[in-house]
Amino acid sequence: MLEWDPEHFTSFEHLCEVTLATIREKTEADQIYLWLNRPQPELFAFHPERGLVTLEPHHASMLGLPLPFIEQALAKGQLLIELKSDPHGWCEAVEAPPAQLRACFPLKRQQGLEGGVYLETRRRLDRLTPRQKQGIQLLMHYLAAELESRMLSSLVSRERDERLTTEASLVQSQALQQSFLDLLQSLHQVGVQLSSCRSESSLLHDAVLLARSLLQFDRVAVFLIDPDFTTMQGSWGTNEAGEITDERHFVSPIPEHPVVQEALRRKDYVLVLEDAPLYYEQQEVGRGWNAMVSLWDGDSPIGWIAADNLLQRKPIKAYHGEIFKQFAAMLSQMLIRQRNHAALEQFNRDLEERVAARTRQLAETNEALELVNQALAQANEQLALLSMEDPLTGIANRRQWDLTLAREWEMARRQHRRLAVLMIDVDEFKAYNDHFGHGKGDLCLRQVAQLLQECERRRTNLVARYGGEEFVILLCNPQPGEAEFLCQRIHHQLAKLAIEHPASRVKSQLTVSIGFSYWAPDQGVQWEQLIERADQALYRAKSAGRACSRLFEPQSLPTEQISTV
Image (cartoon, rainbow, N blue to C red; front, side):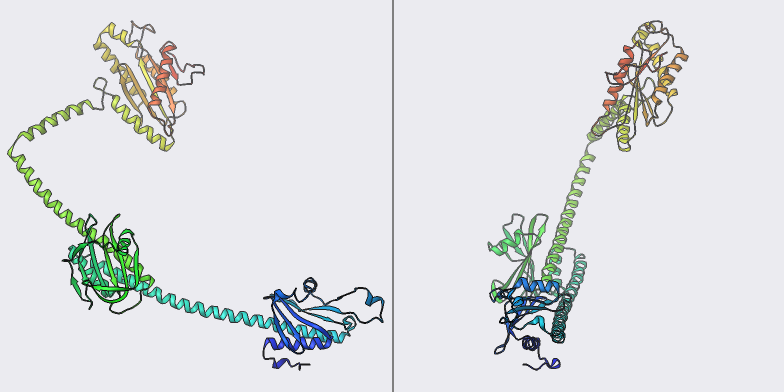
């Protein structure tokens, strides 16, 4: 038997070996296993000659372990014992040879720990003394405690490793972030300095200079392409020693190389070639990374920037690509602005020359002035025709009516308000003209217009002459019954005016017929439909014998007379 000395266990495996050996001795087990379900599946066996043997958990069924029996003991949390062969013979024949038993001692279940010791023996475990059972149980408790300690220690070690890894990643991330922020600040300084450049050449020169000194690029060159996308031209670049060089003399067809073509096809894309040959004046001067990003005016490429690490050989970081892309976008905008400014200055010079030539032309001839005077006279005539006032009655004319109704219709639609239109026709006016003459007829129309204005004085509403002997009134946001009340008032005041009309077939005094309609404008409905409704109502008033008012109603509804004089 291995000596039971808990203070001198060298490892978990040593603990398991001593524990299983002790239990085997106390139970005289033929086979003994330690089965663990959690925190992770593990299986151990103890042999007197080989000691502790680690097995694969999925081999349990191949070893003949009764997994349902073991799982039942673990679920109940108590010792289970049963015959491995005949379940009745050993109870009925006490003197019979002892049968082989199997037993499962579950470990004390802790959070995250589940397992037990399974053994097979011919000793009558059901006849163990309480002291013997207590000893085995103490071994199980101690094993469970050590398993839990091992589990917690593993968890602490894993969390410590994860924390150290996270801290290292955080430090690295902060360093990268700080480097990126420093470059962003430098990029801002580059933009401020480039914004003060007064020409395209100085802009490109300073862009190359500042990209080297502030943006950590060893060599930088800017190439421009023509609008036909066939020719490239150098501007400013860097030689193999890092010195700024004037390369405006360099003109060449755009290379057909796939790398160049791809860089010019993709907007806001940085193309990087690692371990690529680096050139100056078409001669290879070293190897390193080479980056390209195109310059764009809208959807058209106008050039590209090339950079490499020939001098310091520093590797390119991910944030370098983002800085390079932002630098190209900024330079594109400034280059476009410089070109637009130059084009604007040239346009102003051309415009000044054209204005001077035109001024001389106008000074040499008075014909243009005569044409202007004629045009002014025509404009005055048109202005008179477009007057907003009816010359006969002095009230609003048809043009002012149409403009006002269209404006109020749209406003009422947005504000969800109603409008009302009254269409008024002087009854038997032709007979009046024939009887009294046109002079008296014009006077009659002026009297009717004045009466209508006196009946409706609100500034938000409008009284207008619609044409001939027809008048219209627009009510904005009318109250319920307001149009009906106005109709009654017009009939009443006209009766008080008592204009003689002996030629009328309606009455001996002048009368009017009125049709009116309310409507809250809807989306897609035009204001002309409100006029049509009022006109239909006027037709019904005339059909009803004139000298009355009618509200627009569907044809299926009965006609009601609002007021009759």
